[in-house]
Image (spheres, rainbow, N blue to C red):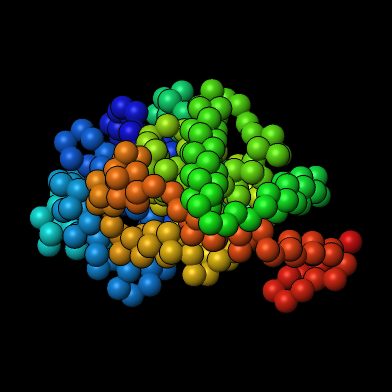
Length: 366
């Protein structure tokens, strides 16, 4: 993720920056931000209390990113925060990584574990206001977003398609089913044409969202079906860079597509978020992908990368370019469309009735 230059000269500045580094205002959380010189290399967050063993890979991760110093911030009451901060501090010191600052924040006040002076760090804590900070203003000006809480981030990937989107999806599926299934020598030609059109739609969609536009329902439904073809999905994956357009496009499709169609788009959202260091968003996108298809290989691969705290660069550097994908995969073949045909062969499940909740659902109170 390309982080704008944010000058952090005080504990209050650090506390103002953290929500923009993780994407939301943390609560009951432990956050570690690793830096190399003046550059932020990565930010990681855990729910408190931290499960046993969850911090074991932290130093390895920071070393892999050439981190030389870290800021440690715990959010919540002292009984919850202090043991976690002590553990991280001990691990960092043992790993030769300097702790530049360690803080606890609660109720609009902070306490520094690095400062022993009651003059600058009184026992009752020091008040701070992230909303009025110049750091927050700089972050917003550069397009960084800090949602109110983790729940808000989760809601940002929840379904919102509705009945209109469902009807459009059914129509697009019917149109694709109406295309006669090819046989003999024309099969690969049909696949080549479908893949070429899908690749073009991916690139147009990225350009559209880069300019602030948005796909209509038909365009979204069709692109969602295009992504069932791995070559098309991998093109979208290979094109991911630091632009906001990738987050905006794949988040929009993750929310609008029918549940059975969402795994590729949600996985691409996870890849784009992970690329920018937004691991919380990446994890939530993977939950959507795996809920739709528990065996979806791209989502499983990314989940393993997140669980093992791999650097996004490790996978990004191994991703082929679109030209290399053409070279590796060769000319399109009819078999490439098999996942799409399987998807088209299934009817969309009936929408869930608000008055008859199924397993794992609860009816809203009147």
